[in-house]
Every structure is written in C-alpha cells, then in structure tokens.
Image (cartoon, rainbow, N blue to C red):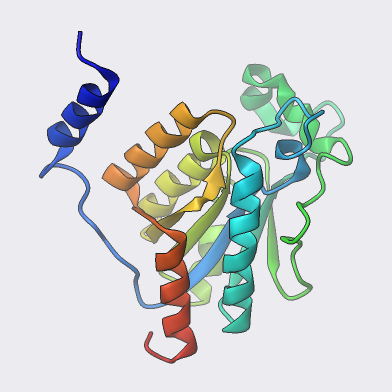
Length: 219
C-alpha cells in the first residue's frame, strides 16, 4: 500500500499538466467574506470548527487592507425567515444543524469582521453566496470581475461559492490562510480541488500584495 506521502505525490503528478492552470486577478476585485459567524468559533456550538479561529484573525488583516484602498467588500450570512426553516428546503433535511444559524449568539458576526455601514451584506439560504441571491448582479453592476474569497467552511460554503463564482464568469481567488474548516483533511482536499479546477488558491501575502498594488494605482 502506498504511503500517505506517496499518495499525495501521485495525486499531484496525476493532475499535473491537466488541471491547475492559473487565472490570476482580473481588472477589478472585490473581497467576499463568506459566513464568518460565531457558529464556527464558539466551542459550545455544534458547528464549531477549530480551523476557523485562525482564519478569522488572518481575514481581519486582509479586510483592513481592502478598506484602506476603498476596495468593494461584500459579506454573506445564512438567514432564514421561517421559524421552521422551510426556506432552507432540502438542505435542512440533510443538515438539521442549520438551525444553529438562527440562534444567538451563534448567528452574530465574528469580532473584527463586522460589516461597516457602507458594505453589502448578502443574506443567503444555501451554501453558495450566488445561489438565489443578487450577488452576481451586484458585482457585475460595479464592474467587478474578480472575487477574493475568505470565510468558512472550506468544504461547504467556500467551495460552493468558488464553483458558482467561476460559473458566473468571475476570477476566483481563495486566500488559503483566510478560510477554515472543522477538520484539516476536507479543508486541504477542497483547497486542492478549488485550485485545480475552479480558481486560484493564493496566500495571504499574495492577496495583500495585490491590494497594495491597488493602493499604488497599479491595477
């Protein structure tokens, strides 16, 4: 049986030259912060994800830099209007834990990432930030062709948003340090898939360098 390291090498070799082409940033980017709420960071929450706390801290740095240059910023949160979560549809049947998102304090935004009064908040009912929302229209109307994605969870709402993002024609840039999950295996597997097929997984340093270029008028 192949070792875990050998298996990882085999995967990389298998994909090499087939998937993994870099798309890079487009003309104008917006920061998209996906579902950074306390449901993922409070240890008494059923959705607690150990990998999210560090992602929140790293994301605060990127958010601060983006605000400093006036880059458009969009936040998403999962919101349900029905007490029975009927607007969660079949997803609620599969994942009853979604009821956590209607329960304070779990539905509150993580400290340091609260939307400012001039930033858009998209209220969604499903995993993707695009599904059933006005996000694509809002971005297109503002001339945005690139989304810098941060948030959680990597294997859920971040991945779904990345897939829908490329399907709507956007350059998708997922910041590795700024996304998190409850376990490292699905986290890494989904980053691998996103980077292979749907967008570029970039480092926090790369995201900050691009934002710095916006400040200097290079983009």
